[in-house]
Length: 106
Image (cartoon, rainbow, N blue to C red; front, side, top):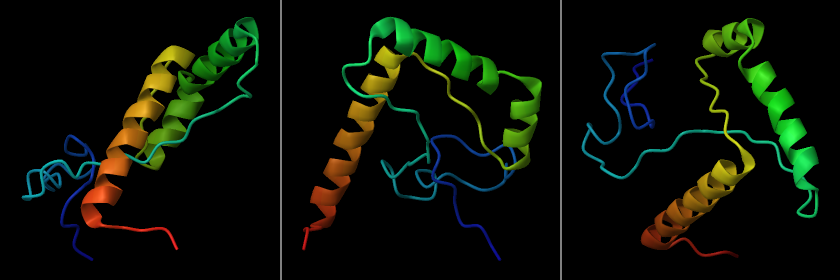
């Protein structure tokens, strides 16, 4: 198997000689797989803050970091405001990609 490129904005530490998709000639094609935790929209802020604090503790724990390193993942802890902005940005970017590709829903 030959890896042609990685879809992340920067080269992978695990594959330092593999270019990003932008470096390989497809600028604007970056995509990072991510997973996040969501709560109902009416969840009180103190509860969101507590959940966030506990999740960040786990993400920063040596055990979790080791597990993520073993699968080539990098946690991106952020507060709810930053995560809302991240989701909005991701949604807008994917919508542009879908429109540029002419993809239509069945």
